[in-house]
Length: 239
Image (cartoon, rainbow, N blue to C red; front, side):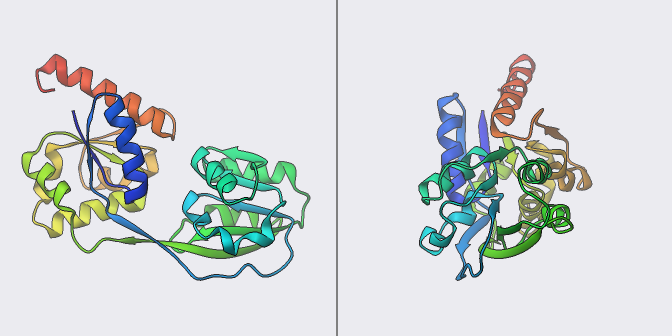
């Protein structure tokens, strides 16, 4: 099965390795480019939170945070924390909502938290933490849309066969917009779409596209959903 991966390039390549090991034909087609920002971490803090490994892309700027309790979303962010010399996180949550709960369990009210964040982000984590803690946000990276639809994505759309993996609401919306700008919007319906969460799948539903949502908000569940779709396609003679 052809599987189109439209997340940022480094993440997409890592996913491609997993997909190929599972017997799929991975097509890397990033619609986002990650850019590290210039920043400084100033002040004294009691803890660190991060929702993406990309937030830790400049470890030399994070030396002052070593030894602080860290709370993160996802195993990749936990690995990046270790790689940046920040140590093993106190808690690794599945999503931002769960991260807010875990952080509140461990820290006293009023604790000083630095949130290492992307420039374009959802407000939920800040909204959950700000009432109880002294929260400082440091923007460490930007995930910027590519200018045009990647050629690999255009080819997949032209053929009209395969599955697209969507890892966020924003990247799904960007993929749809780039496809339409390339004159390939009508072909989107010919592909199957798998979203990591209901939120990530929302732009697809709003565009009138069928989308399967992973049972759990992680890549393992997305790959399980791929296997289910492939089994269905095999029974229908379309694999």
